[in-house]
Length: 441
Image (cartoon, rainbow, N blue to C red):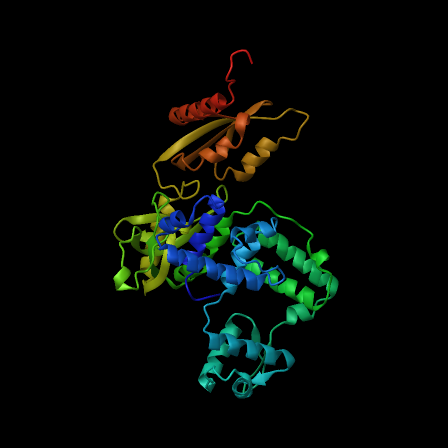
């Protein structure tokens, strides 16, 4: 994974997907909080990465970046997700050096000293030569990310490429594994690692010269682009939670007019940011399947328990560590506050009572099956052949409303009265959209 932050590129892609090119350059730049010049530079960089990934595509000057999304409709999540993770923030010398190391280890196991000799012999003349400490640092990084493996034995340690899984599989087993990873990456969360693994398996299939047509077993077209892009923040947040470290970030709420702000590194062009600086102890990360959103729940030392949409996080940095006892106390507070949350709502508890109508007796009772599957801690208190009563106490009704609404005419809200009236008003409004314009129709 790249160490550099891709906040600007992520927000750029989110806006591109959600607005479908509705903004011009000036509007795009204003929404992002950057200059038109920076917008153009970012666009050029993304195009270069896309050209690198899809080298087989004909190169056309002036092609809109949105064409990349339309090129492969069913796999349009691939470039959006993968090219940000492929565009590693490596210096040119690091890029050359790591490529040489991996290529050399493809043939046989080598020591750090042997790899240093290879790098000194084969690196371009304009690239600085590495010392042994640099090579050992590179080997440690490649070993941590699972690219190479240190062989058993004493010093000097020998390293080899770690491709045992792919090398030991037959062609049919490799195809089965690819199909399994493809399904899991496209249907489970988080999915970044799955897409990267799928991409590696696809390269292995190409190396074995298997026909590419056999890899296209499944097609997907329901991706939540924001969900995939937001996973760039997940693993740093998971690490901060595991290490009990606070994080600092600049937050843009959904109500904010901008979604990104330049870091004001040049004092001549310093501008006032519209984001909100936050210093938070992260406690939990939650995924909302209904809308494809990630949420960060944590303790803000000014305001207590807070929730943040991950899409609004930029410039995330780890801060100081907190004692284990303090972390456990804050986590217990969060669990108490969200014990009755349908998702992350921390409002006042309210009892919701709903009547669900069963389908025709000739059909399976899919309504009850779904309620039992998705209804969390709610219970069925009364039922007959035509309907059943479902009750649940939740922190506020905002988050449960979309779930109830999705049942359509199979659901009637009984309590609370306020929620019932809200549903009546919504359905009346929907009905008005379908009323005829002329009385004689």
